[in-house]
Image (cartoon, rainbow, N blue to C red; front, side, top):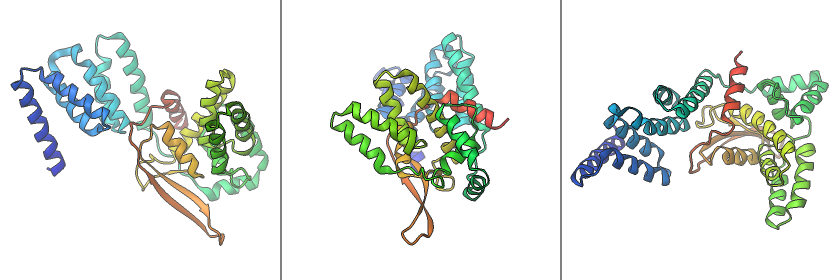
Length: 315
């Protein structure tokens, strides 16, 4: 047994003994400890406390369903899908109608993601495809800007990764300039400038699209916000489909550092590996693998639609 696991076990036993000594409900004590861990972003520790709480109260039926639901969510956030599915099935079999519906939906999402094979980015193939038919790029771009959800991973990958070949490479300074206007209180100017950029200069920038989506909501520009939401979902789904993003072996492949920042915003500032291709001053093609570590659980951002796209990509 690893030292860390041993120490965790000792702490759990000590907490249980302390709870009994003070006449507390040990299940509640473990749930309280789990809540404290969550507040301190200690997610693995929180899972450990919830698991013991569930085992102690396993025969308590529906009264224990909240613990199972918490475990399902936390395990899903940690990409431990098989374990999450086990607890989701328990929730789905409960007598709580609302919980049943939520659990059933989440089970579909988990199964979709479980069966998904990461999209392999082939930059040479993308470049050859662009050279063969530049008109195809224009057609796909128009559909993307309209928020056409029928575009598949290959289509969106062509747009995003081919953007450099088409002179649409995301400039990190563009995103920074929008943020500067907002910081200066010039929100109307920032919104107008952002629309011009996201429609013309950087239509495939995760960071810019995400910022503009939030601004459109603030401006109550509902139709435009919905279009941006669809674009963002397609970009987010395609980029995360290039790898799980949590290991250096299969990083998410992005074209600009600002897109890493955008993905971190969307994912709740969780750690993410990103392979960023670039051309050095002497025109040698190179790439970097960056690691960004954050504190916070990965949000299930647009989860249902993302899972839907995962399913469709496999059909």
